[in-house]
Image (cartoon, rainbow, N blue to C red; front, top):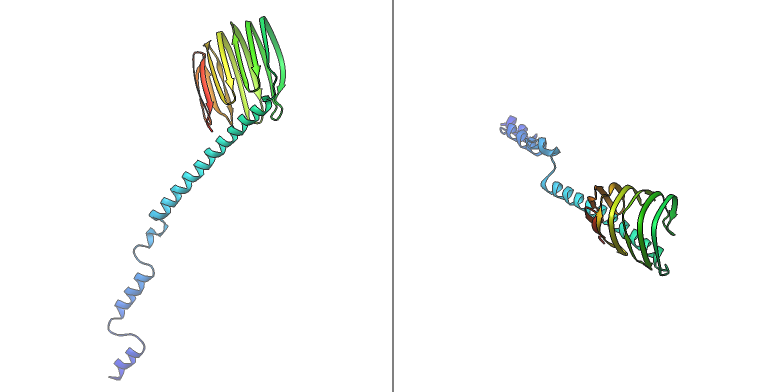
Length: 208
């Protein structure tokens, strides 16, 4: 009798093995191997974070492109009305353009028949047969393109641009207003700037 009381006093009885098993389940159990696997909630949170980061990145790109368009309009809003017309022409050399964001480039061009009209942010141009090569760089955009046109007419108003013609532009550009690639007048612009070109005819717009 005294032996049983002593065992009970120390907290050990006939079911001592069951106590050990019970304690083990509260400690290192059979599900502990899964502890390194992310829970469903963690996976959902991770997915939400990835979507949020992608949305923020896209929003930043769109904001930068919108800023570029605004700066372009600021550069030209006070441009006086003017018009010019040329018969045959041939030019080559380097140039710098832009008040707020400067562009530096090189152009070589030659053609027959060109008329240009501009006033404030509006601009229109018509060209006869022509060929040109142009490389241009700024901290917003880099491009290199070669152009051969039979005829074209284009119009621009701020971020909107449209062109109708028959041409064979080949080249590429990369910048905040998207990535553009053309081959023989046909190509596409992808990014904050969306555009489609087919054999020299083109329409594009910067998505705000």
